Length: 201
Image 1 (cartoon, rainbow, N blue to C red):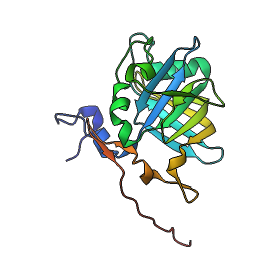
Image 2 (cartoon, rainbow, N blue to C red):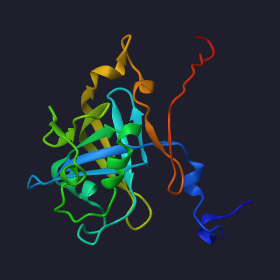
Image 3 (cartoon, one colour):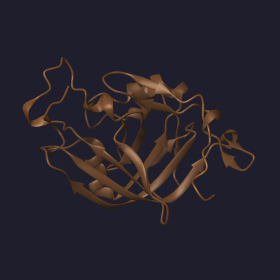
């Protein structure tokens, strides 16, 4: 099968986001200019540079109360800060609770019963029990083609790692089984890994 996205695919559901999988989930915590907090998962997320360490996530829809975007992007525009919390399999249900299109006044930490912890280099909260959290300062927001598509880039200014996730001096992803996004309503969990050496190593 071949299709041009501009012409449609003719299938019951869009296959695009099922093709680019698995995708890590960035659980983004922010605070608005008035101090209200927000927590929402984004599966268009990844690390993009080592030195300095940088990450990005993309928001692709809008809420009526946020002028063409969602709470996360709106808050980051206002404060220039955000935190990326890594999602483990054990947190799948509470993460999903924070994915709703709640009113801007709703604090998703409180709504889903998630414990907060303070960040050290930025003013918003992080998920206290997350395997890792990346405190970020905004570097740029890029508007992509489409009505509500924004890519948010940030420099990592602080890194939290849960002590039980450190094994022999390495951050061990199998100690917490990262949750990943597949297509449609499907998710997966990482429970196996293997190593490969690059040519010449």
